[in-house]
Image (cartoon, rainbow, N blue to C red; front, top):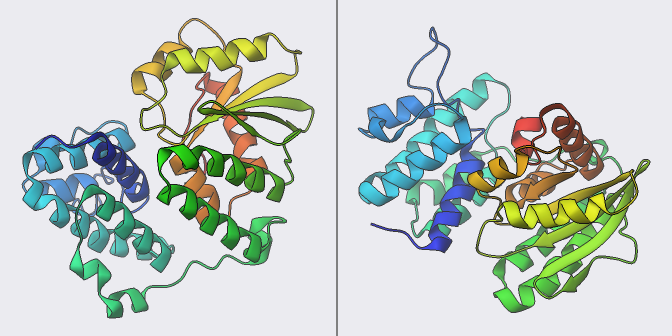
Amino acid sequence: MAGSLKQSQAVSRLAGHLYGFLPGTPHPFADQSISFAGVARDLGLGKYWSGGSKQPAITQLLRLTLEQQPARFCDLILQAVIRGMAYRESKGGPITREEIDELNGLVAEVGFKIPDLHDPEFLKSLPRNEPPPEEHEGVSAETLHALREHFGTVLALAPGPRGYEFERFLNALFEAHGLAPRGSFRLVGEQIDGSFQLGQDTYLVEATWRDQRVGAEELGTLAEKVRGKAEWSRGLHISYSSYTTEGLAAFAVGKRTNIICMDGLDLHEVLNRGLNLEDVIGRKARRAAETNHAYVAVRELLP
């Protein structure tokens, strides 16, 4: 079955959410079943596991299972959770109630519901993710909760009003982390523009929330704007729907990047893990300096 664009985006977000549940392929001497490759093999879906880079491989496994064997899709998710619980317990970081709640929401976006993951007794048994206040580095638990609620409001809106609410959310997010944008972010057409100061660097910001992933052309437009400013200028591009693999590859060819990128999964990570936005941007900038990659997922920078 060929999925809709919305369903395809939900699968990509689901892959990102499952990323930390299991290793892609385990150490040769470890239990081979405790991995995404092992789950796929045991469910007869091994031909859909490509190996290589972990997140694209998980995305392909989910997508091809959905398209070719949709009746096994829920089994695949459920086994990833069951084995992920054992794996995460062994690592000292158990799967939390919040992670399962978010997982259930993403599965619903794809068009499914897994009863076992909605069982009240199961949900009640899960530990809750309640980071101590110091982990938020200045962002109070109350403010963090309000930001999560605000982001959920944006998710529920239609495309028209969503742009304005996304603008308000970004202003609230940056202000909460001490990165108040100069004159606030503002919506121009379908795009949100602004700037902020981080250390000695001024960042020009462009943000968008469209159904389509962003390609090289739009990244190049922001990069050209940055090149036309002072030497200490940089750029931050935010695309909720993320970026095309081809676009990121094309953008990196033959020129040094002066921008970094964030997507919806990165925003989820900042909110759900209580990460410091200044630290996230700093780590992305450092990785871009080291690799010339404008986009590196937060889960790769902060596993």
